[in-house]
Length: 174
Figure 1 (cartoon, rainbow, N blue to C red):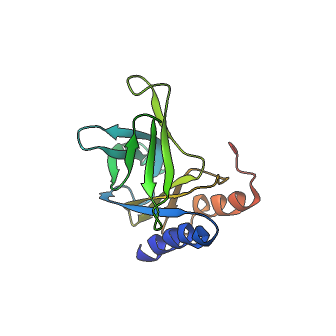
Figure 2 (cartoon, rainbow, N blue to C red):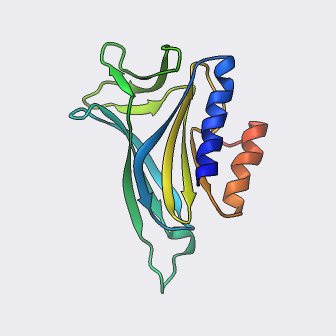
């Protein structure tokens, strides 16, 4: 798990010579299905704490059957150090040299809108035997590919497809 976090941090910081980059690891961890998958995700703003939160739902659906019924589990991952600019409706993180990096923004309005990731931001969900760590990475330039990346510590096809198609830029939804 520490290697996966190190790799996600390394990816975010290697571009810092070219542009500003940040990596924020959530202090929240979850224990879920070792071979489950993410089925739902949403960004939310907890105004009382001023925190950007990723709400994730995992399921055991890939291996559920009559003996092991389907179950879903939801978890919240807070990202500390992310600040909300009400005037611009944008969430920012401060990079090493003090520049502000946009990580997310409100669509529509805060009362009835939704939050999505900025063009340079990605959320990595790193799973080690079902223990989940969330890492938010962002740069001040747009990045292509998937925005929500789930990586398990097993050698399954779901781990290799994002690597293969992400590099080719041919992943559906790009």
